[in-house]
Image 1 (cartoon, rainbow, N blue to C red):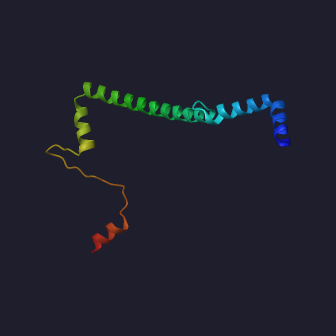
Image 2: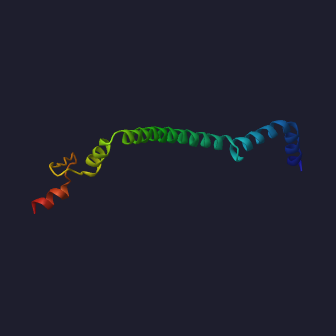
Image 3: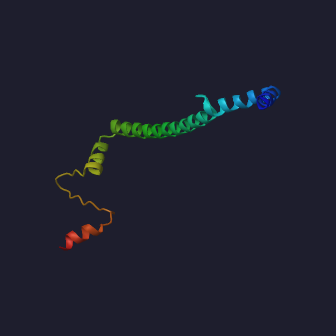
Length: 111
């Protein structure tokens, strides 16, 4: 019984401090609008802004290419030659590669 009175006296004396600490813990860590959750959302926002910038740059590049295709008929030939290795009847295409051969490729060619 003596301990209970002592605990109640401490709680009664420090009730405002206990409520403030409990509130900080609740708002800072436990609640769905907590500080930790807010930091995670800010990181997501930062990542999404980077993606928006990347897609905007890609969109600008694609729009530039589309405009080039609309104004220059030779652009179709350029794309066909570069991407799809197409050729006219009087030319040859050589594809050069910077890829290094792997060990297994070397063994297969030697056998």
